[in-house]
Length: 513
Image (cartoon, rainbow, N blue to C red; front, top):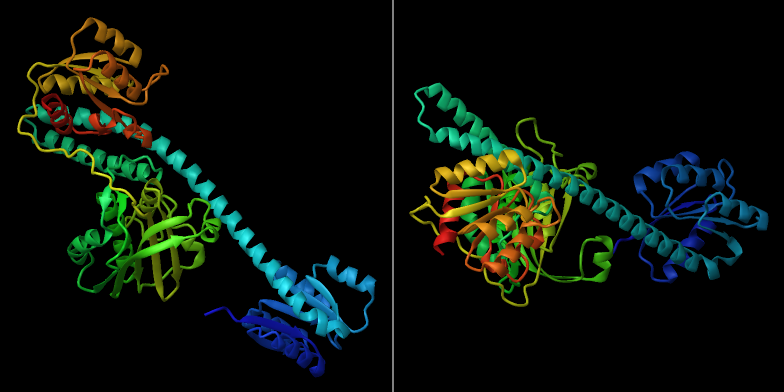
């Protein structure tokens, strides 16, 4: 239903007020109308009626239009305000416009000028509101991008540090200890380091730098399969209702990450429904046009499959809803949330070429809408990692290329204990010199390295000169283009920080493939 225009008229003449109403009705305009003639009544209706437009007489017995205008501009700078008079001249009109009036009319010209003036005032107000919203959205997008760059850089550095910690702790645990207390302390330290690794993974998700494995996905099928898990996670107090449109378009997305995103939204909904409630998940097709994209600078117009997650919870005030995707922002009690869940969902949607928005009302509930681009052509899933029985080496030679000295020592020890002959290089140039002089079965290389040559470029050089050598990439900061390029399907990536057994399984698998 179209919004009914709310008009507040400051006028002491019943005849003039009726004239205004009659002129507006003549155009078929849908409006609600209030008329007041005192300062107290005007201030009261400003708050209660929340008008979209004010039409004010220039002079009243106990009040005047310029004072009313000043009151409005102080509280509502963008509210359209039309002044009217039966006698004022050009100087008074100029003063009114200079004071911030949207327009000035002579009452004698109401029948010709009132309706066009109202229409123009509302059109300009709409354009100002749209422009202001676009500016706010652009500012928010820039802020989120800056936060993403910062958190992504932090995650990369932390992953290298955690790689050293986790790697050394794995090495310690593999040594037989006669001190059970030492084993327990080592286990607790390793558990804490792994929780730290999970936090950096969430930061990378927000920064849109997590490695994804996109595949053509039926969102209805994925949601239907997720419901049982959600029912166990949310508990009996939360009733789950599905409304899945059968013709919902397929999408290309990492299905595991989409499940994680929906689970995050569902658990947040549960927390907002402490006394129980209803979680509703809907799907359907939506075409986002240029007008919608103008409101959200990061959105490309086009066809999207939509997933809507709504709850009947406590809802959020606007000042909270405007910040929910920022990392570490949370309204939960200390110890009950990191503030990274929704930021992960935000980053995942952006990295997948999609869009997410939220609408919430206090006491009514919250709606999240996820838009994923319609998959026009099929995309196959990435390589499937199959478990292998043998995780140790058989004396094969592995060249470990790592510029971080501490992490290099860890990986050399781990590979040695796994049964490999290990060579070292601190950058791509050194690695190429080693390869020219030593037989190597596999190159295990970091991606981001000093010296102007990345691990990905090193991998291409190795493929070109020594095609029989196997390659595994590793990084604590995997960018989107790591999985791009002609050699991408044949390259494997191990994200930092990794466990010793993960390293062993992947190296063995690549050598055996």
